[in-house]
Length: 115
Image (cartoon, rainbow, N blue to C red; front, side, top):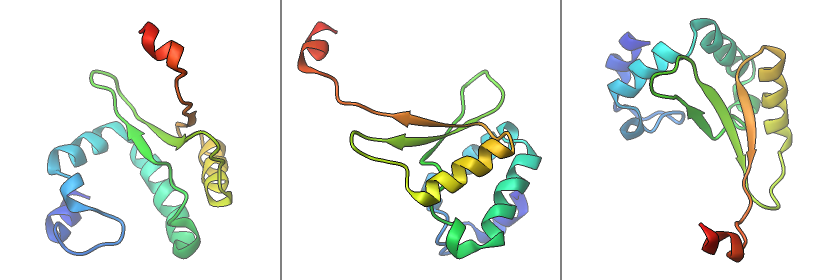
């Protein structure tokens, strides 16, 4: 992955927004995400790229000082999981990949003022 990063960084790619992937973040991700997890994710994507390139979780969380990672699908008020997101969620759970759905709700005015 490091070699491909060096070869391809900056080239147009529908999956990567290069300014958001500096070398330090790549290194952090490679240290936190087990190779077998990357393999499972890439195998699913490549099995049917058109069907599986959407529905990936919104975020990947790394915690400083803690090993590992988790993927997070964020859903706002009134938002539901789409079919492609449900399929990714089921795949990740079936392969014991760390994934959660975070349901965001608006804070009531009385709660906001109490903080």
